[in-house]
Amino acid sequence: ALSVVDQINQQLGTPAADAGHSGSGVGSAAPKTAGGSGKRDKGRADGPAGPIPVGAFGCELDINDYPQKARWRATNRDTLSQIIEQSGAAITTRGVFVPPGKPVPEGERKLHLIIEAETERAAEQAKNEIKRILTEATLAIMEQEARGSTGRYTVV
Image (cartoon, rainbow, N blue to C red):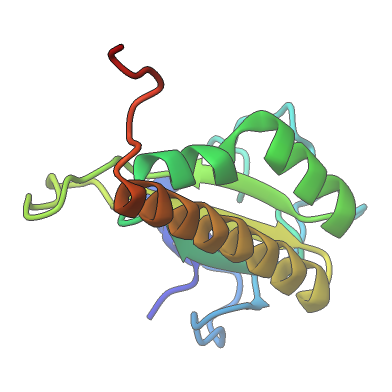
């Protein structure tokens, strides 16, 4: 199994930099890009010049199968900014939403988050916080549906 970084680099046609990576959970990713600083250049799009600048650790979190409101709560700008600030991880949304029972379009992947950080602890912290938000939002939605109050307004 390939790591997230290896998969992205493979799609872009750049060489795999870390052949020994297991690809499971949080783990070592490709080495830093040729600047040597190891700092993420958020404004640069990757191209033929080299691999994507990444942290030392990365993981994926599938979010496709969570309810829409839970996905939105976990991925809105304010929430992600707070998680990024707390953990120091970079979080990127990738893939397309695939409704239940539908096949994944060819060449696409289900909706997921890519979490990258300089330390394994930072990547785990970000992943756990996103999971917590998704779980809480899903439970709140299920409770609301159980009460039968799914709309904003009531007819008088």
